[in-house]
Image 1 (cartoon, rainbow, N blue to C red):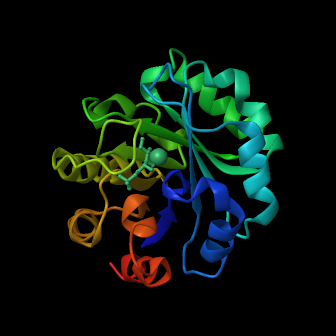
Image 2: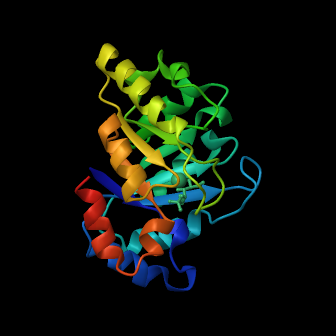
Length: 214
Ligand code: DX5
Ligand code: ZN
């Protein structure tokens, strides 16, 4: 299992310390949640903070943009060090063009789906994607309750991926813990994002290693 701890739940006054902790853990990627207060009802952090994280991170940055008009910032996120750039289906009128733009900037392209969005909307573009991020909470906040319909979506998406020959990874974001993580792993998830479960635990390093084993 690929594990991508979400820095949304880290201690913002000690980001460097928390990034170093993740460097020393079995985490595969660092999940970075960028929110604009328009696409989602919350504001998190922007480019300068991602740039500061990059200076200390020894793992790839898995950047999740919860913003409108993401095309406008694709070059900027490359500049500050994103390896994976995930944009929301619901925020892109010309999704194919946006995905092409991410690839032109030599990043892996991901598309995120809100809980109400069916996975079928990606069937015509799945071969162009490196990653699909299934939201198992409504985006905007950490620490929310897992929406169980996400499990069926993982299975349906896996079907679409297998039929098309796409190499896209399936990543899940929201309410992931050992219990929901196990169900998602069995359903075919490749990667798990976990924020409050990792940073709220007594020993984040061992929590990450438990998630790795799912
Ligand atoms: C929510 C973010 C998540 C968030 C997950 O909008 O996309 O990445 O950090 O937090 P938990 O794991 O606490 O549900
Ligand atoms: Zn996220």
